[in-house]
Length: 473
Image (tube, rainbow, N blue to C red):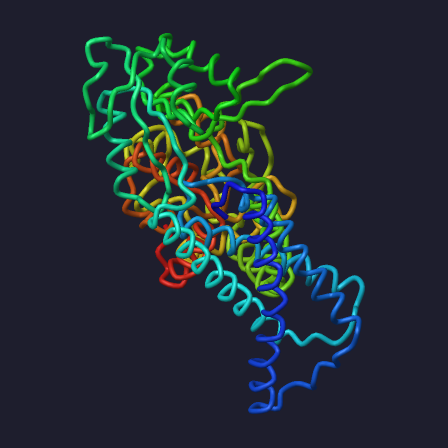
């Protein structure tokens, strides 16, 4: 949550744990009414063991929220962020609960109840978070729980920051004044706040004013001037936050680690949420494994159709590049005549794609069965094995052929910084209409920069619709 005091975090943790416990009871009432109306299930036996299970589950949810930083001090948080954390927590906690239940078998728990509980748990935690956020914002708007800060800088960046603080009274920030690198501005005002002194006067100002935090709003051109501010604040024990273009667009996230006394700064340009990535991998395993089993009769029929209607192997073997340009082998159902690769040179003039990718609108190498398989993306199904193995993911940029990489520009190569997938934004954005390779790569980079579990789920649902419409080539 968004309280600075430790007791505030404890209150938030207790509220979340209590909400998880109450969710079990509320879900039971909803499920029991549903069961009575439909008579589709037997009653759940209430026992002492159930109480321990409920308590354990609530502790797991609190632990998951803690791991994701839900209780760390963040005055700049938002309700949207809180709801996203709740969704991730409920999803992972449900996966843990179902896994433990499958292994331990701690009693009769109908699947219908678990489905209802997941929805109730998410709604209950969301309502609780919304209530706490509104309560804290109200308290701060009334002048309580406010943090006194100093702003370093008087330029556009500092003015924008002050205007934003004034617009969000719920953040509870009280700006005492500003520091400047220009002595001529001392004694004037900026955005209604006094300019208290120069950057070199930071120690005196910290002694005269009860500042709890210093916000630095300067450009990289003046960053050398505030080294003393950082040193003084560290010595005085005052929190410093940086609102600057110091790192420019080098990374979406910067992490500092201390390894054997060495400060190591990591510029992170790809998703690094271990919990979310763990869930993504779990989804890949469960979905790809289930589809391989459920669709095995269809896979057999396709294999027979490919083998009996044209000469050549059943599968087309892909030797492609994946995460960090690592080579791996994948497979598709063969949709072309056996010597298709040898004909590519003479068909190069008909390529409809710009850039290093080769694609034809009416490819004469495609067989009749292959044309049907491509239309409904059935030729992609064997790649589920690569997903299960871990070489690919369900959602991610298209794998790259080694010869294609030679034609990539520098910025194109970032698409290889995450695991490739069967489908991605280009697939659901009208893959037949995307003929500019740069536009294709921009969609892949947009996926990398905005990745979330929710985005993966939206892409998967849209992919199902695109496949059913038969938009493949």
